[in-house]
Structures are given as structure tokens and as C-alpha cells.
Image 1 (cartoon, rainbow, N blue to C red):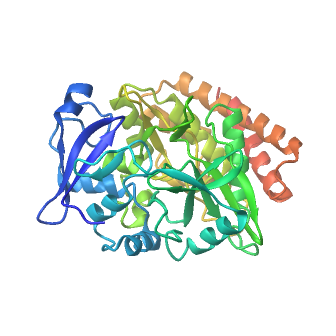
Image 2 (cartoon, helix red, strand yellow; image 1 turned 120 degrees about the horizontal axis):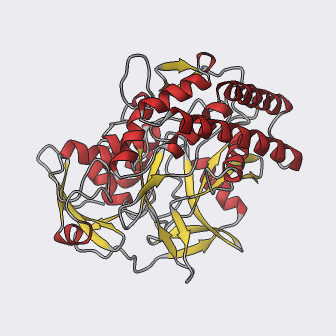
Length: 422
């Protein structure tokens, strides 16, 4: 799909017009409708792009790139779209109807409401076929499927599900589920999808999420199915969208090089401090961020990077931390690198970090030590109870005894450390 101008819609308001600059960068101009609805300086669209303010093309590109895949997956999407992989404008023109959050990008003066949206039932064989081909291209097996896009390196397919089963999203119908294939059964990361299901179940138990993921068996293929937290089924049965952006987008971090989403060595960004400032810029507290960081650290998640930490932005402009997602356990695996994705109190390695570092990190955001300590203690105690309850259900057969024992021992040690410091 090619276009010279695009309209960016948010919550039923045409918020901005996108055009190409001479350097092939996307130029954004705010509409009077957006300024009238949200006011000058509102960050309802993005922390990086206040409504009404001049939007630099580089910042616009970083924001839009954040909705597109990375690495080889981006190349596959570009091939499907018939554009160059570095053509952000062309990719958004193609995939903008179904991206993360509530933004909808369509051709100039086109309606954001698709005229021919429909959901088409799929059998399990067809789902498996689409997923098996997702690593080679977008998984779009015929031209009737709508184009969808989510960020990330891992190949995935986007579907809808009702009481009858899985459905393809066609003609611009929004997707509501993400399906990702497991790693090789004989590889060190074979249980990553199993520990992700466990981690999300624990997050839901302790109030850090609302996602209930599940393992799928598609013939000889295993996969994880995760409902999208940025989609809501409304009372009339239609699908509502909830706007969100990840930390990389919020601070203008270009993740064309996937390593940039990690904080390594002397790098100052991205950081947990940046996440705290995004929340504070919109008047939200950082207590939930500390709880989420504590949760990820205790589970041994080495992948809490700038693309796996996001913010929800409501139609009123209110900003809250997004639910826990893409959380897995890694430290029990023999090939783990032992590093946190973003530093905690300036430290990179799990073995060097303790409760005192969680306290010091949150103190640097401005959280009072007693309040921070209470959050850490409560999160760790709740997580320990959630792990015990989930293990007793017997509903996670793919999580090995070694993984269970490792994570429970780790959390128990952190609970003792927290108790000594409270």
C-alpha cells in the first residue's frame, strides 16, 4: 500500500495528519479536533509527542517504529507490504489499522471504521499452518486477511477467539489474541512459554496483571496463546481498543538495533528511572512500577527491557502502568546470561542485586524508603503465596521440578532479605 498522506485516529478523534518529508521521514501535524478535545500539551497520544507541540520527524519515526516488528520479522512484513524495510511510513500505511494500542492509521480522509471487517473461523490445522509460516513471513496466507503488526523479534500471529474457536481477522477487524510458537523441545529455552503462563497467572493473583495465557498443542507444535491487554470486548460485542505505548516509544528510543532496548554497560538509557519519569510526567505514582520490577526480579526474568514495559493512556489522558506481560523465568536455565535487561541501582547482574538495591533504585525515583520497603515486602510475600498456590493446582505440567524449586527458593530468600530490612 502506498500513500502520500495518512490520518492518525485515536479514540474516535482524527488526532493528526502524517505526511512524508523529503528525507522519507514521517511528518506529523496535529488537528484542531485533537487540540480541542485534549488540550495543548496533553500526552494522551504519547509521552514523546504532546498534543499541539511541534513533532520532530525523528521523534515521530521512533514512535511509529515502536509499533512495528524488529529484525527479520520486520523484513518479512516489508516484503508482504511491498515496501523497503526502512520505510516506516509505508509500513504504517499498510499495517496501521491493527497495531498495539488504540491508534488507527488509515489513508487520508478514510474512515477508521472498516466497511468490510469480519471474523472467519479457522480450524486447528489452519492455525498451525499460519504459525509454522510466521517465521518466514507475516503468516498472511491469502490477500483477504487484514494486515496486523506488533513489535518484537519473535514471529507471531494475531487472531480473534470466541466461544466457537479461533478466527482470522479480515477486512480491518481487530485482533484480540497473540499466538507465539515455543522454542525447540530439546533446547535450553523449551519451557519459556510454560513459565510465561505461570508468571502471568501469578501476576493476576497478586494484582499486577489481568492476562490468563495458555499452552496450545497444534499437532506436533506447542505454542502460547496470550489475550491482548489493549483490547476489550464491549457490552454490544464489539472490540474496543485501549491506547498504550512502550517505554522505548515514550522516551524516543530507536530500537532498529534490538540491543538498544537493553541497558548495558555505561548506557544511561533506557532505564527504570526513565519509566518512573514517564509516570510522573502524567501525574501517576511510581509504586506500581516498583512492584512490577520486584516481581520480575524475583522471578528471574532477564527480558524486562524497554519494549516489555508499557503504559496505558486513557481517553481522558490518565496514564497507568500496563499489566505484566512477556514475563518468563530464566535463571534456572543453564544458558542464562545472568543479567537484568535494565539496571537496578546501577547493577547489571542478578547475583549482585538484593532488596537493598530495589530500595535504592526506587529512592532515586523519589519514593520514600518506608513506602518502597512496604511495596517490596508485600510483593515478595504475595508472589511466594501465588507460586505455592499455582504449584498446588498442578496446571503447569511444562514447568519442571527444577524450575519450580529454583524460583520458590529464590523468592523465599528475597522474602527473608526483605524482612531483615523492614
